[in-house]
Image (cartoon, rainbow, N blue to C red; front, top):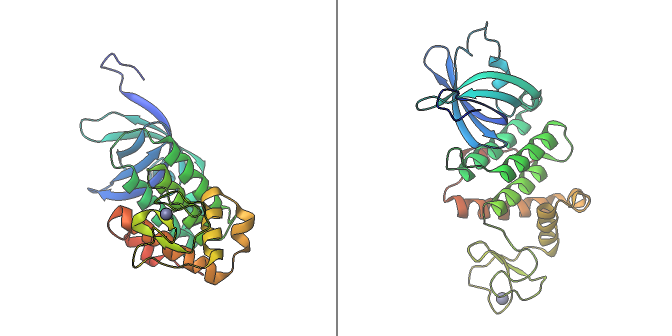
Length: 249
Ligand SMILES: [Zn+2]
């Protein structure tokens, strides 16, 4: 990379968030890069069977890319597969819808093009890896990812102390607009009253305590997922399209 005005190439590691058709043979690839944040770039000729790297730029793939700074969109000039997560995830519908919901969230949380978001990159990479390797149940990976990605974006939830006054928990009530757990004094009308185990699971998903998370019963996971979805929806102001299609087994 140079700054003499003539060399306009840069390299980065990236996760493919989504791809869109462009013209006859090209695609627009939305990437979440390790150092440059979210980048939309054109991959020329990738829909031709002769394309050198078309298959490498599929959703959720981890790639090493070289880009040329274009006038409006950058142009992908090279792509080398680092991890073929796209193939592994694409062959399983539940994993695919889960990864799609994560990629949409990552895109929404990195609204400014090329604003560095290294923590969002690392979170998504960890979640996509966990999905592709079937390390944990897909719904737990998704909820853990959403809680952490929202926290990194500045929307942390409290599952222990009162989100309003800091009163030490655990508490019995939960209110999305107030930031999570609320004590009896701060509890607003309409607050939810999740089971104590649900608070415990949510805390475990946020901190990455997988032993506790995997031990949770299905009804606890379902209740936690509902609260995570409400939290996400509240902050993104609209429900993610793909979240509705996620299969929660
Ligand atoms: Zn309080």
